[in-house]
Length: 220
Image (cartoon, rainbow, N blue to C red):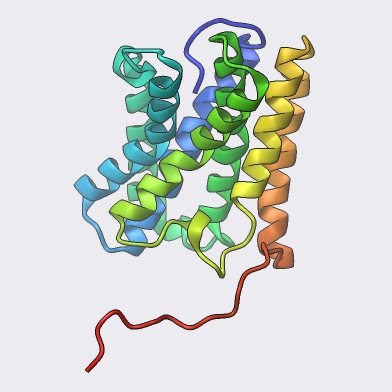
């Protein structure tokens, strides 16, 4: 989430920021529906998913108070996403993998926004790439943890998630650092991240892992 009119944050950049917040909020609320949470749980999970990565980003780069505490519209947008799911979840359940679609949209936008904001706060490209990646995956990690799931980025059977985030944040940080941070370039990077995330699910792309069995911690 970007909250300052820097660099590429034009009207288009602001619109993308709002779309990212709503998209992540919807993904959080949809997971809450799957976990049979009530409206309060849906709202809470939506807000955490939409704002968690941005809060972690701002804490890392020293941009305090964090954006969500200064820009009330972010929480409002997240709550609107949760309300949309509450009212339309039966229709949304008919979509093909709705959580994936909205999560991918939010991931693409947030990794780019996080990396560019870090560069504008004096972080070097390597550090900015890490900050951007965390901005993209942080809300999802908190969402899954609160829903009592192993975060998707840590699951052996999950498709690509962290890797598209890191590639996108690295590209965005490099572009911004070299002065190529036009909104059209960064929007293209966000779209590539989103496409990679969705393609990994459709084509079953995974990171190699060891085929091991769980080891019991207590033996009889």
